[in-house]
Image 1 (cartoon, rainbow, N blue to C red):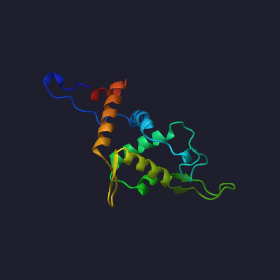
Image 2: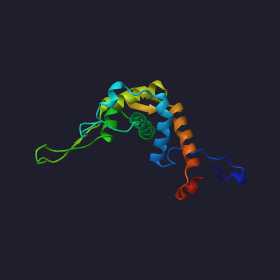
Image 3: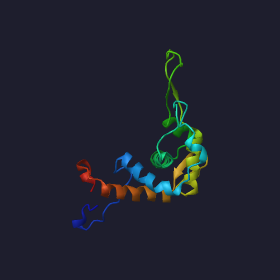
Length: 163
């Protein structure tokens, strides 16, 4: 990543805002998969009452952890309640003939809380008393380093202005 290098200016560091979110989350998930342990109950748990089955992805726990880390960095300090709202969905109405309208429902708070606790153990997130969770310096460094690696690997013409 060389920007204004000919003029002697230092090369800027890529941030999580410089790369597409899905590419950043995918790269973060690969790193977090080795660092975080998926609990035994996670393969049987739904991600919210609006779902019929648990997730089928092999690396779901790492992907959700990467997504949570990015959300905490973007919107932090943020609490479990607000995060569960963001991961919620629409629960269908009555089961017979779908007569009742759909209602908004929150995502699984237990799953979110457990992942945030694991991220705290890895010193990527910290608790701000009375405010929720926020990103630590190590967490921000991990995000920025991963974003730089993703930006180097991307071969997309619309992102050339960042390179």
